[in-house]
Length: 323
Image (tube, rainbow, N blue to C red; front, side, top):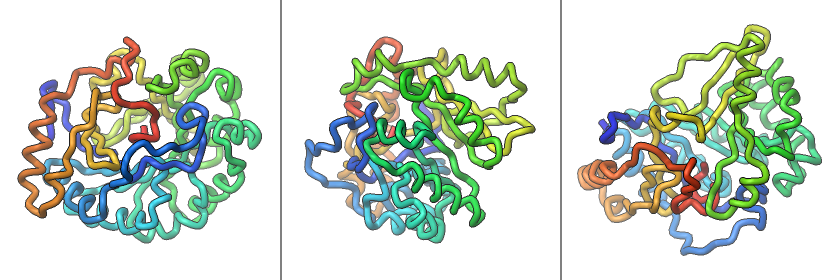
């Protein structure tokens, strides 16, 4: 079992398969994607070995991220490979949702269990101002198509920003009134490239939590392989509301996830000092060297991410690791 020196167990792997993204979100890649390395992204064979190695040490859930994972043409094969790995119970994707209606049926056929879609505003003009893309209606249609076909394990990720969406919280509540989706508000996090933007736009999720509790929303039980959100449900709403507040006290106490970059580097935290290469161990089918390497590196995992001290580690922008 993957367990660190603080007794935390790691059931959840966030696996980036590319750092390329075709959106220009103002909090992540406002100037668009710029490659500063060789695109030696993990191959399908390496991903199979990686998934098997983590699964053999207790990992039950793999979330495929980017950049934008749908930019890889072999994404269905990657989903299938992860899903067919012995011990992996859940395969999820985080996507910006471009061409979602076209892609989702293939992903589901390949074994996809869960989908997260990034939507930071339900106002088309505001959505375009945030992302640089006039795609909101198309993305929402893709979600509706998925729901109507019976694929209901859908979450929406919304990054809270003072000037762009924090004033319009009710539109997000209204969306989940009659839709069985989980909408999660994520506090804007400081990264290496967005310090000024962070200082201008960061807003705490605590006021939303207070609003939820004051209006009859109740916390739900958190599964051991779940993400970091505090999720709340209400009997009058089909959907749920989640909060991801990385600046909250003791946020890291329940950490259950590790990250591997598209270049095959293990990141013990989203804001770790550096990625630690697993590439050498991914060249052979024998899982033991990979297991030993991961267990050895896990000894260096820290108790907290030190975000409150302004520490951002090696994370220049969230597209590097998919958040």
